[in-house]
Amino acid sequence: MNTSIKFGSIHLIVLSLLIHLGAVAQKESTYLQQLGLKDSLYSKTLSETRTIYVQLPSGYNPENQREYPVVYLLDGEVLLPALSSVYENYYGGFMPEMILIGISNDHDRTKNLTPTTITTKYGMPFKEENGEAATFAQFLKEELIPFVENKYRATSYRTLVGHSYGGLFVCHELINDPKLFANYLAIDPSLDWDDQQLLKQAQKPLQVELEGKALFISMSGQLHMQDPTITIDNLMQDTSDFTLFSRSIVQFSNLLKEKGKGLKSYWKFYPNDIHGTVPLPSMLDGMLALFHWYQMEQTDKFNSPATPKDELYAIVKYRAKKLETHFGYPVPPYPEDLMNMSGYMNLDMGQPDKAKMFFELATEYYPTSGNAFDSLADYYESQKDYTNALKAVSKAYALSGSNYHKERMEAFGKKK
Image 1 (cartoon, one colour):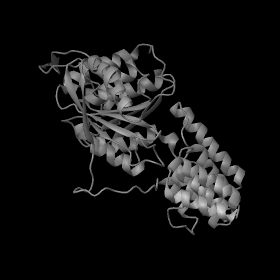
Image 2 (cartoon, rainbow, N blue to C red):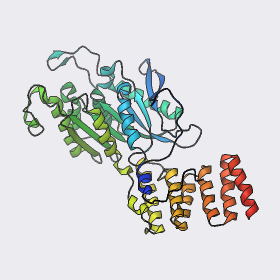
Image 3 (cartoon, rainbow, N blue to C red):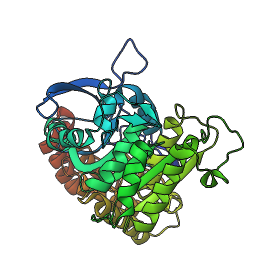
Image 4 (cartoon, rainbow, N blue to C red):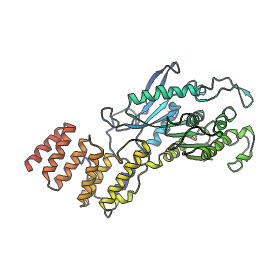
């Protein structure tokens, strides 16, 4: 069913392939935006109730069969707004629709996110509880992730994001349990912890296979708190404690590029940001880098009336195979809205064969969508093929049960 205005200009197809234009009705609210549904679970591992904040995709429907990848964000009570802003601006064309899980670390943060126990730090007594990252990792693996995947329509394709001690935890997970997540985003990670303990661990031959995994590490511009002459160019020549934090990040990144067999590794320096401001730009660049493979290809071909139908079909099938390779399970290559729009636009351009192809592909990749079959019925109606139009809309009615589709069935039945 064409629920939108038919578009005369082919230029709109580029926009629709770069931006997910699915219009979702907004419920009336006192607020401009509501962010992060609060949820919780009791953890036997941690002996406490742990709060999480759940941000669902706009089209999320617990009743249908569609499932979504998940991003697990440490310090979610602080960082979820930044991640949500990045996601809302780039999902669809640059990254998949995903469920965002903000994990609260508002207490026992140092204890939960650091991998080894210390009593002094930079020569000073360190009295905070620390060193139980392995226990927190057990909570993620055995309790939180199963909780999310049982309660929400979540897949096993996961991304882990953390800042500072959270970034340290992200790197710890990559080295010690890389099967749990596909992507790792470590923002200005505290890799100086315990005299670079994790760096020393990574210097040994890695006992894990990182094929297909991706890591993005960022570093803020705070290289030396007291000496402004220290720059990214001479950082590694300094041996003072003041640069150990930054040097550890550079060393860890370089080491993984050398030893991380199969790992796709990214590193970026933000000279104009400090430790507290670097999360937002890191999330933007990091998520785009980690999901660079998701970005739509050859959109100019869709925009050109001269592109042969077979070439367009090959592009769609290539993308479907590419996404399945990365996710590990089949997913539709494009949102249903975009396939439908491509079909209607080709009808408007007088290219019915291409239109039929897009409508049929929509029914192939969205076989439970009444709207997809109703749009195919529109194609057959435009060709005055009322027999097949009736078959298509009958399928739509079987899926939707809507009176609209029933009325169309009756109308086509009279025209046969």
